[in-house]
Amino acid sequence: MTATTTQAPVRRSPSRRGRWWAEIGWKYPVAAVIIFYAAFPLVYVLSASLSASGTLSSGGALFSDISLSNYAALNDTSYWTWVGNTLIVGVSSALGAVFMGACAAYAFSRFRFKGRRAGLTTLLIVQMFPQTVAFVSVFLLLTALGDVFPALGINSKIALICVYLGGALGANTFLMYGFFNTIPTDIDESAKVDGATHAQIFWKLIMPLVTPILAVVGLLAFISAFGDFILAKIVLVSEDQWTLAVGMYQWVSNQLSANWGLFAAGAVIAAVPVLIIFLSLQKYIVGGLTAGSVKG
Image (cartoon, rainbow, N blue to C red; front, side, top):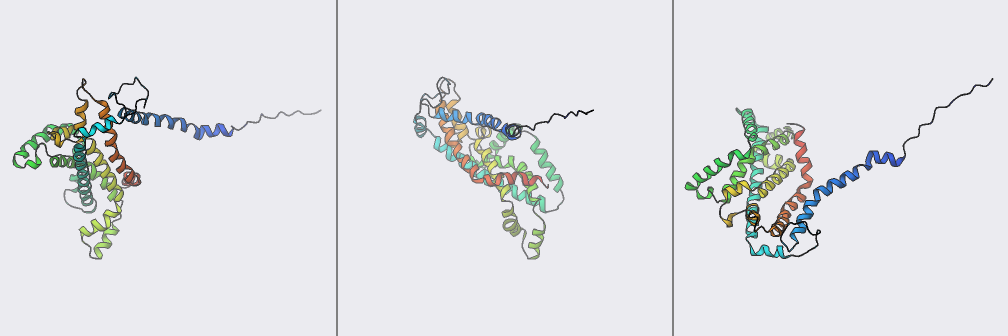
């Protein structure tokens, strides 16, 4: 009498191609969709800037009508004056935001004084209110200051820079504060033993170590001031003082005479300074944004 044995069916492992698709392959079409979604508006604006029709109508294919007439027409406007005004406001706001934020963050991180916790809490509470709440008060304040100090009144780039610095101080202080806390206090104590002053410790020891967060704050402040429209529209009145956002808006504010081709050409050129600064500081961006979140 012979016994029969039945063997369980052998389960085949998934193929290498199926395993690759399940683990990695599906990411490629998702990445392609994301890149297309992000790049299409940029390509469309570039195509519109090279179109001589001066419209954004989608009747024709992209880059079907290539012309540099829109870029040449920028020379007949105040565009380059607006570029200079925008760079002055953006660079000054970025440098001021970095300096003021670093000084405030260093004080809150390294010194223990009465009102320290209350000061940090106050800065946090102030940042909770939206900027739109302060538009009327900013206008009235600058109007009153202009009667005494014209350089700090309406239609002054200096006044606009001061407004930007005041609005960004709280957020920048908190962003730098967490980063400053990651720097060991032993460095300060060793420098004090060697006779270094607080100013020497701040400029020669601490500042070189916090370069990533300085670059991030400077980049964010520059982009914010560079692209701001509402505050610049409120403060700057005359055409020779306008920034790019305010000046270029005039080209498309009237629907019957909107020149979208000129606007697109100006937008493409306006993106170049931001792109250059971003590429120059990109090695600091990731470290500057994440290091401060480890210890605060």
